[in-house]
Every structure is written in structure tokens, then in C-alpha cells.
Amino acid sequence: MIKFRAMISSAKIQFYSSMGRSMFKFCVIVQPFLMGLFLGMIYVNSSDLDFTTYALIGSGVSTFWSSICFSSASDIQRERWYGTLENIYVAPIGFTWIIFGKIIGNSIAGVLSILISFTTVFIVYRRPLVVEYPFYFIISILMLIICFMVVGFFMASFFTLSRNSRILMNFLEYPIFILCGFLFPIDLLPKYLQWLSYLFAPTWAMKFVRFSVTGKGSLWSLVILIVITSALFLLAQLVYKEIDKKCRIDATLGVY
Image 1 (tube, one colour):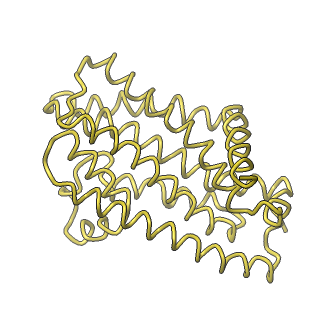
Image 2: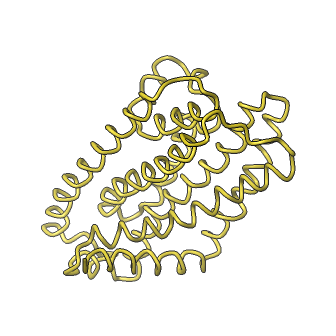
Image 3: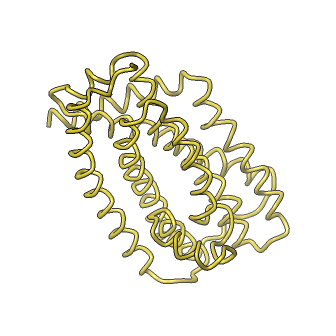
């Protein structure tokens, strides 16, 4: 119970501190507005289903992913610069609970970016939100958020090893846009990239979103999403234990 309260407190502090930074405000407020406008221009002459999937949902998901990458990398690096990463790492409450709280805080801000992109596209282009299965659509958005949080936790474990994690963030952010079908169908990718994309949990999250919107596909996308996300969470726990040992032996959590 104490650890859970600490995680919630970490989430609250992270949300307010993140929203106080201009760069994060850009990611959460300005970027979804611009993404909604640009993707709306691209899909304005497409069917309502494609417009809903890639202009409405794709713009929000893309900016949400950016906020997760930003939180996983920049927050680790910021704590390192402030000289507090070592203190957080050895806190009695546990490093994983604090970091997961940070990711939850930024995920709440990420949900705000989804709402902004939805509102922007709807007001500017006056296209309806066409959803075949409303119940599955709600479940798909919730699973998408959980999936991104787990991926962010997995990345945060690796980012503790890097003294410049923002470089890794930039390396991961945009390829995921392409590989996981946020902006266009992965069927347009070469075959070898399609097979690669199936290894990533966000791909299956987007497949389930498209199933709820278009009715095309099956519930197997949800099953596979749950399996991969659960496996990734367990893997993140194992990776963290190994990284924890390495960081304590090498003493690499400081700035120098």
C-alpha cells in the first residue's frame, strides 16, 4: 500500500512538473494540433473509416507515443543532471515504483494530447468519428495506453545505462510511427518490415483499434496484444534486475 501511494504521488508530481516545461507543453498541446491538421489534409479525401483510423486516431496515438518517449528518456536524463537519479535508485520505496509513477503522470498528459488531436480534426474537417464496435473501441484505447506505458517502462530501464538518453529517444520515436502503423497501413511496407513490425506490441494495439473502427480483422489482435504486452512487462522486470546489478557495480548513475 505504501508503494502504491508513492507511485501515485510520483505520478502527480510528474504531471505538474511536466506541464510546467515548455518543451513538454509543445509535445502535448502544439504537436497533436499540428499532427491533426497535417494528417487531416492527407486523408481528407479518403473514406470515413480511413479518416477515423489515421487522421483522428493516428494523430492522437502519435503524439501520445512522443510523450511516452519523452518521459522515458528525458526524465531519466533530467534526474541524472540534477544529481537525484542515484538517490531515487536507492530509495527504500523502489526505483521501479517511482519510474512507473512518472510514466503514469506523463501518460495522463498524453491522454490530453489524444483529446486535443480528436477535437482539432473534428472541428477543422467536420468528419464524423465512425466506429463499428464502440465497446471494443473504448477497450482498444485503454489497451493502447497500457501498452505504451509498459513499453515506456521497458525503455526507461535501458535509458538508465545511457548518459545521453535523448539520442536513443530520437532513434526510437519515429521508426515506431512507421513500423507500427500509426500513420498508414503496415501493408504498404516491404514484407520484411511487416514481419518486423509484428514483434512490436503497439502494432497489435493499432490492429485492435482498426478492428474496433472498421470491423475488419478479429479479436485475435487483442489476445496477441495482451500476450506481448504481458511478456514485455515480465521481460522489463528481468532486465531491470540485471541493469540494477550493473549500475551498482559500475556506479554509472551520476553525471560523470
